[in-house]
Length: 208
Ligand code: GAR
Image 1 (cartoon, rainbow, N blue to C red):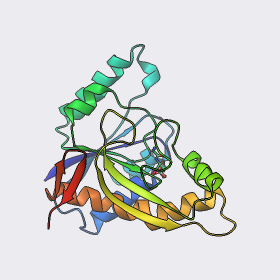
Image 2: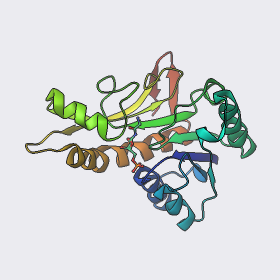
Image 3: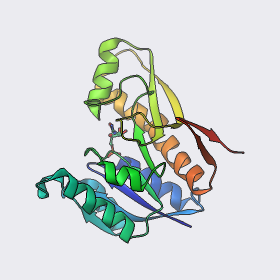
Image 4: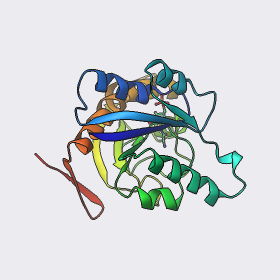
């Protein structure tokens, strides 16, 4: 059984999708044992608490040096024997130390089809604003491993979502969540916990 830490900053609908998938038995070899929030007021914390999942708040601004923040987060995850870290709407950039300590063990959900609309500055609603501004007809979501470059690590699963007439960033965000994020993130986590993801260079192979 792998111990899963989910890192959040806001509403936590992706955390909820993981909790629900776990409840349906869809992540048989993993258990969410910790939720870490960068924001003490994140609704995601209430979702964790109402499912009896231990929580911890770690804020970047509580550390004068970024390296001390990086060390605190790494130490926390290691002290709780975490096997997999999931970034589910986590809005603080991770440091080198935690990324090295959990190489190919950190999964992020990004609300576009990487390599479109990703990298620094592309997060949350902004991703959908940019997609609508560019006039793409298809967008989607990507579950990928995290490396030292933002949104660059090996891709695990992607799912496409159609843009519709009259879409606003908010409407599109909701459709991408419902049709893609909440489906592929639990799947990627289950694959990881079942040892079904092989990383080869900057790519993954999903094992049968
Ligand atoms: C989600 O759409 C997630 O893909 C996005 O933030 C939202 C968090 O929602 N993440 C990023 O943009 C990361 N670059 P949630 O708190 O309801 O899961």
